[in-house]
Amino acid sequence: MDTGVLLSESVAYTREAFEGKWARWLIFVILNLPMALFQFVFDPQKIIDQETAAVHWELIHWDQIAVIVALSILFSFFLSGYLVRVYRGAKPAPDFGDWGRLLIDGLKLQIVGFVWFLPALIVFLCAVAIVVIMIGSQGSGSLFLLLLLLVLLIAGIIVLVLVALLSVMGIIRFARTGSMAEGLRYSAIMDLIGKIGWGNYIVALIVLVAVGFAFGIIIMVLSFIPFVGWIANPVLTPLLTVFSARYYTLLYDQGAEQPVAVAAS
Image (cartoon, rainbow, N blue to C red; front, side):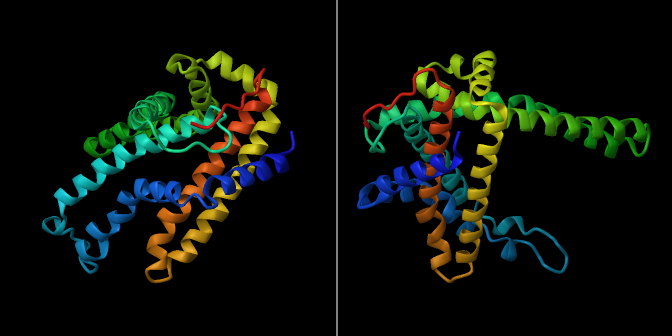
């Protein structure tokens, strides 16, 4: 497997997806906009007293935050639904449309993703419970609880890494089959990654993480520029979103018995 080919094809796909497609790009920006507005209704510098570290809860606009969070969740379903179309192998990049189907597919994809990460979440919640118990016990049995907390944290990290590796292929398998159960089928996903090769698979993911890190650095640098920094995130993030989705799709096809390339819809 040549990661250079994965990168170049993903770049070409992303370029085709947005070059001259201003309406499509605008839809992406709108769907990413709610979280970009969050900083305007929740400014820690205004809410938290810098000298006493006291939080002025009365200054928090809970109604505006609730609206932004609700819109962010709703819009995330549409974005996820679009990614389902990319994961299915649509080429060229699909358009937005059939919004009801986008919503349903996006909801299903997020449920599959949540179920994958549920074990790690449970482990970390147990760790939080141990911390609460330690605080309440006032030192009683603290050594045992501390060791238990350490074990839980290590176990949580291991589970989180494993889930991160498997869930990527799981959500694409869901997109290809249309079955949430198939997206969670551990044995089939392990077999798929085995065909790709664990070494190749991990290297490919590391390369993608490096690309994402570099992209994040660019966004961070732009954030220091007045006004430009605010619009950079919602405007540029769609590029990484589509690029990553296509990259994952090509990686999945390395292990699929019959790679597919369906027409865009």
